[in-house]
Length: 331
Image (cartoon, rainbow, N blue to C red; front, side, top):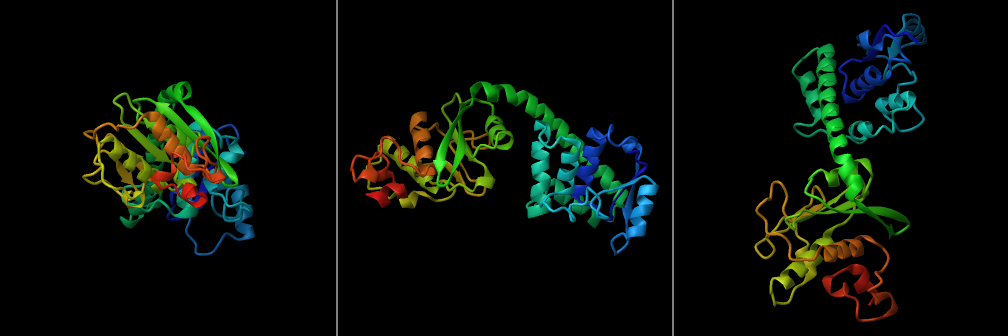
């Protein structure tokens, strides 16, 4: 199907711009002429009429996000974006280098998650506020997406091999489903992000050669780290020689304090960090890596550990004293 023009809504946002990007990058065979096609805009307040749509086809105009065509997600029976409809049609929706971009567009268009200062979607809205022409906005948007994807592809190639060589993945039961937890020892700060973004891990526990550990989670899985945070802090205090009574419930606070200064609970990221690129002067944790892994497992799994006898009325559970609710409830 030869294309001479691409028609999108006036004041285009991220979704149709990204759809154009995918068509130009991956759609040359199915849509000859797509790279040189003129981009035009529907500036009327009403939707295209049947006679308009017939005219589009006759003039070899491809419509995106308008007119009820195959790439108009407003008319789709599934809750999807125009970008995802294009990706599916071109057969590239599972390409590893596109996963982060497709997820980002989906989050922005369907959930409205990217209206923060500096976000790609927000920057496009800022262009419109500065009265930049729609065509120029599309050109700038395509350029920014290309920069993003070039960086993303380099990142994907550089991190992929180390991730596959080093990651250990455990499936644990969490109520009616199972989630995947990644455990890795690496100094590459992108390993955990790769596992969460590309491999859909629910959480990653990563230890660096310095002994520092970080626990990162997948925001879409909405995991609660507070009991894990309290347990690790309590154990850190024990190993530091702190001998006063400790209430684990009071150790679930965000940020850090003078008692346990080497751990930072980042509530908005839902991450627990013993040092990071920004917190590079933190002391390494005194906990064994295996202890941290067991705390995370116990905090996220709905099952009891083989070392826990709480579900049988026992009193030797190593986790009960650290405030895990499932152990306290069973005792």
